[in-house]
Image 1 (tube, one colour):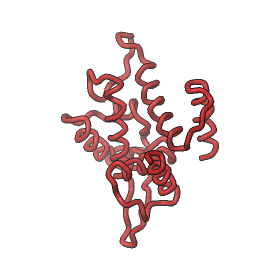
Image 2 (image 1 turned 90 degrees about the horizontal axis):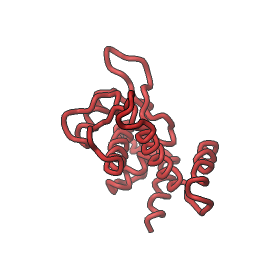
Image 3 (image 1 turned 90 degrees about the vertical axis):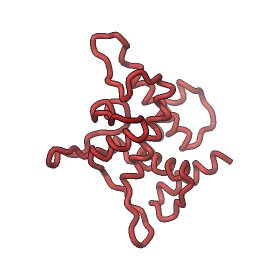
Image 4 (image 1 turned 30 degrees about the vertical axis):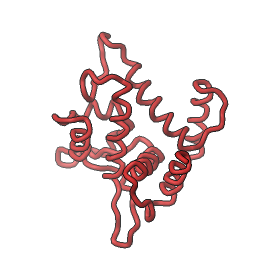
Length: 176
């Protein structure tokens, strides 16, 4: 994770200048920059265009909706045991991803390809019986989005893995 944070910091400095930043602010800004950069890298009206999750959705409206979608997917990729501890799953089936996206973006359910092209989700494993397994490109992104989900939903973060609890605590402290 330290190497990735250094990468994020090196990307942040040219854009935002040298300033004091917390790890959660760096991650949050990097994720938003990544979503924005991916959407803007394809010229509208060009020969090849990036498929959109929901056609006509402005980028500034798209980013918070996609963040909420990814937070909910991060939550769906976690399992609470009978002992109260939470385990992060490496992947979830594509049908779950599409169902969550349909709830957040609205019906009909977006197809899988635009979701993958406009998020930090990747195909994690080969098809199993006609269904892809989907996961986050980086574990730290999964951890951060799960911590964000718990904070947004005001859920009890006890029992989460230590790395997620640390991010949750940093998110709580950032708001105070």
